[in-house]
Image (tube, rainbow, N blue to C red):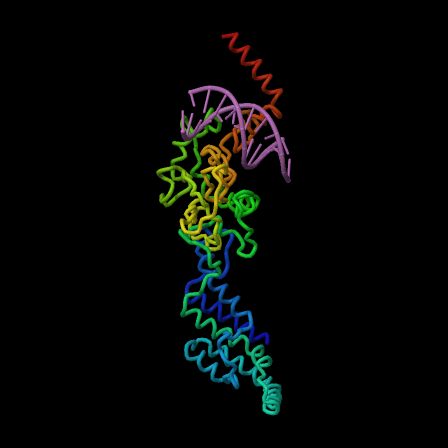
Length: 355
DNA sequence: AGCTCTGTTCAC
DNA sequence: GTGAACAGAGC
């Protein structure tokens, strides 16, 4: 059985390699590679999951008097996958060892006339699974998505980080997040820190406005959209008047993040499947977590929580702390550098008076 | 009217 | 102590 299982795994490795699929994510791979690996790996994993489960006959399929012989099944499979014959030959040795057992089973079947699918299927599950996979390699695998998922834009990395099973009910009244904030932070900040930091404003670490005189205008850079597809005109986030019936985040989330940034996936708000959305929740939706804000500035500040961007740096020497919110930085100053402030004020006064 | 800035508040 | 969201003030 061990050999059989290994052969099965080899097949997946084989088929994946045939399609140029990386089998594992490498933590050091560039994100593009990782996402591609993720996206391309998903169908294979899905097929594997399908193969692992025992093949359940279609409901409309009438009971057959007998199952096709293993040799015929193997013959079909071998006709399409000649490269597995060697593996099968190795498995045949294993079969020969079980020949006695099978003979007993068949003898029992002959005596009782009862279909012994229960005995046969598990015994040859790996073969059947491979056959299923052969079919799946020829046919596009059905993505494990909910039927009601309205995929307007498959590029939804943020939602894609969500587990399909653990997708919570979506209620705008309670939360627009389709992913827990700490999860977002863990995932998105890691990704964003790796790729967005070079794009951060490289000006003065601390000024009256880290965004410049016009934060909104500053934010119109392609910081969140390397492909320049979405945000170059309106900034990192769309000002999107919410439809009266705002839809729940769909399992678009499940679609693999095949884009390079976590901020390109606010197209999943389809016009078809729309649920009620209270205007009081705000019109500005975070494309990452679907959280709604009433003000664009609030959304922009909120975006820092995803990007990890902390444009407000403590001006005090020796304090390298940075904050995503200016008021938080000020609070930090008041709390931690109160004495320094007094000293600096005194020194400032003295210098001014001296001047 | 709509925006940003700022302070306040809550949660961890 | 810090992150994050909200609401008022001002432009």
